[in-house]
Length: 181
Image (cartoon, rainbow, N blue to C red; front, side, top):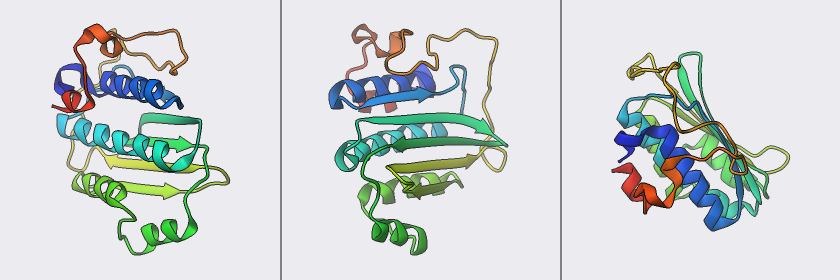
């Protein structure tokens, strides 16, 4: 179904559902007209799923931010929370040895590496920051970015007034696994 509604709509649906279930306010800033190869969209969707799961399980944060943008020939997705952060030992192990600190981080790193991308993990003063960077020019061509076509998905935050048919109960989306199929 991801190939039918696109990553922007699927990400909005995922973030909205996550916020409803977890009671963690998540803002989403993503171009409504972003078009990427399906393999890249699926990778980004799965990484976003796992990242949000980590925010819920580990951070203790009551808010998070997701930003997806095209910058300098790459797609960049960041997920930031304002919780307790990442223990220094886990962070150093992740950065220096390349060894996954858990199944989730290892899976994310592997998915991104398959796209010749990088996954960076930081723990600023408060919270955690996950940054995914995947080059578009090297081996993934940008399918099409149509800035003239209207889209039902905007860049509104969870609390914004804009609604998408992809997040409504009548859209037929019932589980996150259906979206990725």
